[in-house]
Amino acid sequence: MKARGFTGSLFDEAAAAAPRYREALAPGAVLLRGFALDAEKELRKALDRIVASAPFRHMVTPGGYRMSVAMTNCGEFGWITDRRGYRYDALDPESGKPWPKLPAVFLDLASRAATAGGYPGFVPDACLINRYEPGARLSLHQDRNEKDFDAPIVSVSLGLPATFLFGGNDRSDRPRRVPIRHGDVAVWGGPSRLAFHGIAPLKEAKHETMGRQRINLTLRRAR
Ligand code: SIN
Ligand code: FE2
Image (cartoon, rainbow, N blue to C red):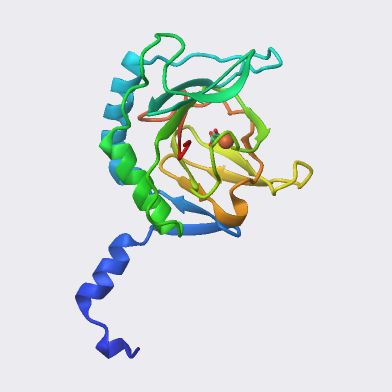
């Protein structure tokens, strides 16, 4: 198409939908730099409400290891781990009540990020919320407790910077070390849906709006 025939409104629409900066991580996997920044205030408000009814807690792996990352959930299903295994549950085991609802601001961001990442129509039913304080880490793992792997994973970073480890489909594939910052959103699916990933130990620091922590929202389709 000739540039002259390209109307302003079409161009503006495309520009508005495009992330400020996109980095390819692997086939089917992208990092959308700063994609969540516009929604930061609303995300934090929603987070405060969730954490007030389902506080962060350190869960235990089936092997008996207490995780350094503190977790909670919102959505129809929450990801949990204890001595009985890893799984999704509609109830918070601490309170016996359903997890807080997925706020509209989470759903909207997840859907926009998934679309920008090449996965239109994403409707998550689960959001794992991770809190890393300096020293906390998440070892390499695959997200594979979901019923099927058609839907992508959308992962939103807030607060302190971290090193995202993004590997391949085999545990032995050497992971890339990707610096991620406040407001970045990673999306992976398709050929990368089962990629091994993790977070290197968080460095000591203080973020100007989030304090001495990194919060990560992992939006998924569990069922
Ligand atoms: C996760 O894999 O559950 C979280 C990854 C992250 O904190 O960025
Ligand atoms: Fe994960």
